[in-house]
Amino acid sequence: MTMLDDPQTAAPWPAAYPQGYAVVDVETTGLARDDRIVSAAVYRLDARGNVEDHWYTLVNPERDPGPVWIHGLTSDVLEGAPLFPEVAGELSERLADRVLVAHNAAFDWSMLAREYARASVTAPVRQRLCTIALAKELRLPLANHKLASLAEHFGVVQQRAHHALDDARVLAEAFRPSLHAAARDGVRLPLLECRPLTEWSHSPVTPRTGSVSSYGGQNSWRPSRKRPACPYPNPGRYEKDKPLMQGMRVAFSGDTSVDRELLEDRAVEAGLHVATSVSRLTSLLVTNDPDSATSKTVKAKSFGTPIVDESAFTHLLRDVAPAVAKVPAPTPSSE
Image (cartoon, rainbow, N blue to C red):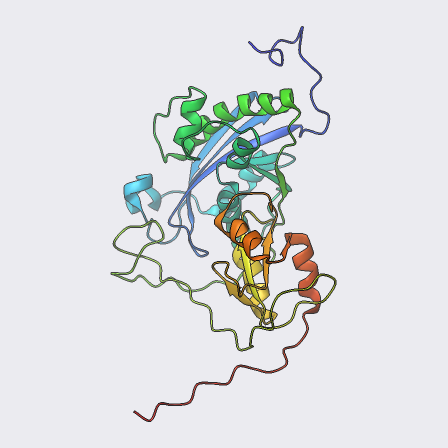
């Protein structure tokens, strides 16, 4: 028993820490914008990480279930499951007034936010905490940042990997000692704001065969999403205290408060070029964690690429300067 566990000798608990947590795991039909949740689990924890209760549900995704070989949920199993709008109220009761905790929280939050938006309901989540980010803050000696490695580090036994209820249990059991270690060492919790989606447009799901799946399988049920080419020339790097200009190449790294694809859509609509990597031609890198050692942040620093956080970027998006000229359309070949 640690000092923080013993009520007789416990150090004062950080007043700035949240008063409750909702440890969440969702299984889905895939990883793309239009994929759906097929199951969800929530473990509610008190301020010190003690389990209060847990909840689990299947969800009918109203489409093919995707990677059955991962989550094990077939169309037959999901056929009689409730639709997301039918479980949204009970789920909301379990998320309300708590910090959402998940392993790779950006993914679980984005899937939940999209489901809530489809149901025309506002998700009652204001902050999230990613246990991967917390493990990095604590400098845990993990071989990698998979949930299995975090569980092994804390001696938590996984029983059914990729089953939402068991994954949520494992994470809840691993989160409690992580939370206590953070409190003991005075570590600031890596909390991020959650901004519920208020924009949603349905796009058709067209099954395709032979392309690469978002899960890495051989058969895909989701066509890849391609953006049109930016019609403006790259004017160069962003300069501090000046507006963005149409044609600038913008890259994103790490977790974002606004759904990543929605943020990229807004950048494209403003006339910016969304880049998937960082090069010497990149005008700006947007990241909430400039000290992380991701390949994009490392390259940006080596190239001297300007770096701003998400809040500053969304502010800059409000007033993007027009491009000097458009890129000429290619002329038809005479061959």
